[in-house]
Figure 1 (tube, one colour):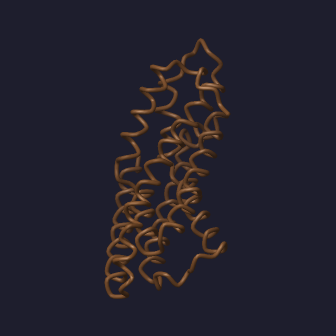
Figure 2 (figure 1 turned 90 degrees about the vertical axis):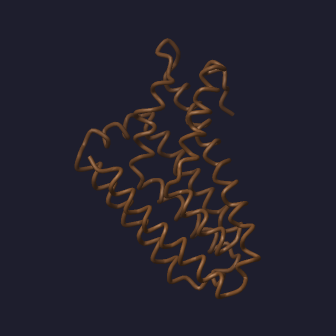
Length: 209
């Protein structure tokens, strides 16, 4: 387990609050998790949360070794990743629109599918990499071991994000009994799918440079 002594208590608290504010801003993760949880249930939602957490952790480790900074510095690599993320979000929106709701069932295969979608939603999100390149380093003390601090702050951020995402799943999942009626479920699912498509458009615009 990573020792929080790697960063000072004041730094840890400041970074925790910064991460919380960032994660409470509506974005692709929040919309997709609400869509999955409301239409497929909390089990599917938590599988997606696990994938999102894994994606954020992987990007944090990659950023610590400087790979994210290389991608951020290259317009070609950045835009390649950016458009792949936009297209993937549109794919999820279209899939949600066409989905038959609970047809996926509570199987390990379905869990794996939602886990992988949560994972790739973040691996293809250049804004996550930018966070680790532009925001996290401002909390690094150059007098202390850099890698140890980066891993500690990454763990804090992933923990905060996972908590916020779990709350979204619980809240959206509470609607599932109400959505057991096929007509209401279809309306809610297609409304959230439309919102996710809108988020994809916003994502394409907000990440342009």
